[in-house]
Amino acid sequence: MESASQVSCLECVRPPGRLFCDLPVEALKDFDFLKSVNRYARGTTLFREGHPAHNVFVLCNGRVRLSVCSESGRRLTLRIAGPGEVLGMSACLSGSAHEITAELLDNAQVAMIKRRDLLHFLHEHREACLHVVSLLSQDLHIAYDRVRSVGLGRSRRSRVLRPH
Amino acid sequence: MLSPYGLDIIESCLTCKTRSERLFCDLPAAALQAFEAIKYATAYPKGAVLFVEGQAPRGIFVLCKGRVKLSICATDGKTLIVKIAEPGEVLGLSASVSGKPYELTAETIDPCQVNFVKRDDFLRFLKEHSEACFKVAEQLSEKYNTACHEVRSLGLSHSAGEKLAKLLLEWSSRNGEASKQEPHVKMALTHEEIAQMIGTSRETVTRLFGDLKKRQIVQTKGSTLVIRNKAALKLIASNN
Image (cartoon, rainbow over all chains, first blue to last red; front, side, top):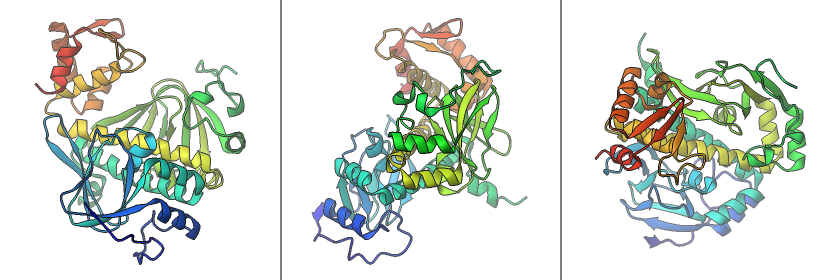
């Protein structure tokens, strides 16, 4: 891990559509104060399934592979997360261990916030909490689609695209 | 009020005695009052469909009593049960928040009391009550964890036997049975439904249970399954 020069979210020129980052100024200021930013090399594991969730990660750039693993070490990719995505949120909110492993596919800059700070932040900023609810809903849709494709051998998308 | 389905309907959340034990329902007084004003208390018989996969989201369903089967279905009719929802769970959450179609089908497997809230009312409620918003985030997180667990079980298990062993161990870890040498599991599902939970056929489930009984790993007593050899079941679950 290489420590980055502190990059401020307030000065970040981000493309539109980054739901979590697109916060009101007051919330963004608070988040900026609570977070730390690091640069990680490709191949770094941000968190591993089964390990307790201490932090939430916001991917500033780069890509992350999210996967699940069997006891025998076989790995199944859930999806590839891209810039702007929040990782490790569900485990932090439910207080359980990480259900998935997150491994960087590129060299990347990642903002990190401690679990207790995040919980406090979400209680303080309703707007941020609503964003988190929307993000989790999207994640859940993707996860159910993955359940469908793994369990029934097809995805909703592939069904739609199949010619009649 | 006793409904035709034998349910003791709780009309008001404000007087509900089980509220404090349930993650979503345990709201501050102001939020609870607001929720009370937008919810409709309804009762359903066993086998009622609350919503169907692919349907536009009408709103959320808070399960007060009874259990609900959540499943996904392929066009050829093959069904996969993702979860059996228990009282206190909020159903249809992610679809109602995102506005995307319901991704699951919800069907009651007991007579149920369900509190329904229209989508627009629910979204307004979340904006106005941050505590409720936080509880919804917690519920979504748990659902996400369950979905990941399901992907792991379906995608990385080698055999139907391994999946069935994992499911039985998961059930045996509930209701204070986890620490017992021979945990008891109340079998509330048919072999067909168990098959739909692990993505196999009814015939395979019946054969696997027969094999487990023959090897004295499990034993049935009426509708209760006794796990007699937990170590052997764990060995099957770990594919050894």
